[in-house]
Amino acid sequence: MKRRNFLMQTGAMALSGLLTANKLSANFLSDSAAMRPIGLGLFTLFNVIDQDVTGILKKVAALGYQEIESAFSKKGGYYGMKPQEFAAFTKDIGLTWQSHHVLGAPFKLPPGAKMPTGADGKPISIPPMRNLRDNYQELIDEAAAGGVKYLVCANTPIGTLDEIKSSIDVLNKSAEAAKKAGLIFCYHNHDAEFKKVEGQVPYDMLLSQTDPNNLKMELDLAWAVKGGYDPVALFKQHPGRFPLWHVKDLTQDRQTIQPVGSGTIDFKPIFDQAKLAGLQHFFVEHDMPADPFASISTSIQNLKKLLS
Image: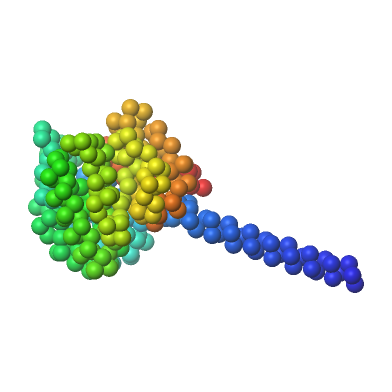
């Protein structure tokens, strides 16, 4: 009887220990990027998506992507739909619409730049696009009506200190309005934000001159690396401020975008700090790839290996 009691007691202790260990393990995993669905930034498909929105988004879902971030469409609006229509459609095909990109100011090509060409080899044409400077409340109301959680400023003028200050005013105003509408407002970077303008780094100004409770960041990891910044260092300096990430890769010379896992960025130490960053969602993105579906297929395969 003593032996049986001993075995029962030790068995209960072992079970208790196992349950505790499993609980701790589950808590640890819940804070890791591995437990988050892999998302896709639809700007990756900019040159093809409007040809067949329904068919292309079904292919995205079939590849294993579960979340999406919408962007600009040659059809206008949300790929030719109203926000409520787009939300219903994406839900029906098994995609969760988490985020939407908008412009910070009227669209202008950089000096000397030309419009990218479409599949026919001709420069693409796009309808007039609304922007936060002139239409912030309208854009916020539409996003809220669609039930999307995040609204992201995709880019904004930062060529001079005056432009940066003006853009910060627009971002602060938009962030306050977005919060009132129940949205989380974020800013998405390119590499230009990390290059000094009149002696100051625009990204540092954006972080320090906006309210961290209102304006969060969607950190494009590759653009930050291209700009000479370490994403992990940014997480340590501003913990919890980076709920969204864009994930793309770069060649050795940091000049050419590659599918995730096809370049030279070491993503593991970055993803290891997901909790510190405040990560909630991440989206694969590849700006104007020659073959969008080959790129996003390679990226998701490599990300699954990385996060397994």
